[in-house]
Length: 307
Image 1: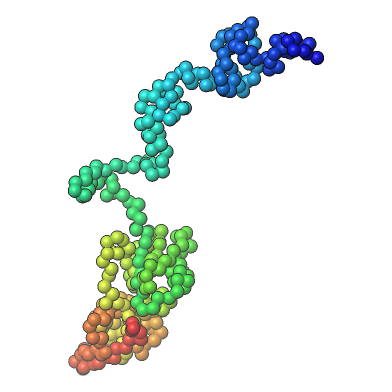
Image 2 (image 1 turned 90 degrees about the horizontal axis):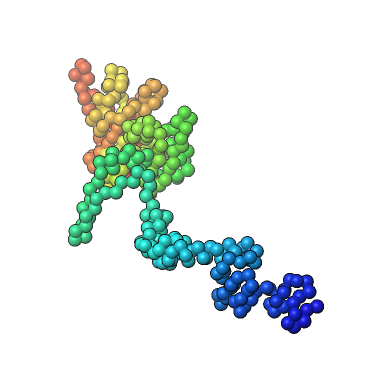
C-alpha cells in the first residue's frame, strides 16, 4: 500500500503523485509536457513514454497536421487550404450538388438578354430539331352528345384501336365533359386513328384530331359533324359505292357506308355516314332525274341528331 510521498510498490506510479502518470507541472525526466488547459496534453518533444492510446493519438495527430498545414477559413474546416477563395469555392460546390441547378448531359444554354422586362433569347437550332415532343403521343377526341363513362371508353378503344402485336395499351383521360385525351404510344396506331377521324364509341359519335399546344388554343369547329343518314328508295342503278357517294353529296360530305349497306344486309334504305353542317337546314328529300328522264324523289332520315 502506497503512502503519501512514496511511490507505488507495484512500480506503476513511481512519482507517487498522479495515478495516471501525467505530470501537471509540465516536467518529466524523459521529456517535456505542456498542459493545454483543455482535453489533454500536447506533445512538444520526442518522448520515450509516448501515449499508447491509438484513438487519442490519431485525433491529436490529425488536429496538429491541420493546424500546421494551413489556415482554415470560410467556415470550411475540411479543405486544408489557406483560405484562398474558400467562400466562393464552397458556393460552387453547393451549386454543383443542388437539385435546382443540376444540368443534364447535353443540356444547351441559350443566350439571354433582358431589356425592360423583355427577355430576348437565341434558341439553338438543335432545340427546334427535338424529336421527343411531349404532346406527340396524344390524340384528342370530342364526343358529339353525352359522353360515355370513362370505363366503356377505355375498354372500347383498347379493343378496336390496339392490337396484341402492338404491345401497348391506350390510356384514356377526360379533360372536359365531352373532351377526352388518348395516349397512344404506337405511332402507326396513332396515325391510323387520326386519319380516320370519325369514330363511334359506345354508340356516341367521336371526332378525333391531333393534340398540340396550337390545336388546344384553336379547337375545331364541330358545327359540321358526321351523322348516320338513311336514304330510302334508292334505285338499283344507284345502289353502288359511287352511286351512294354521289347521292350523299346532296346532304353533306360523304364519309363511309354502313356495314349493313356495304354487305347488302338491308336494301330498303342505304345507311351512309355523312358530315352534316348543323348550321344549315337539314335535307329531308333528294330529287333527281334518272337515265330515262323520270323525276325521282328519295326520302332522307336521320336516326340520331344531337340535342
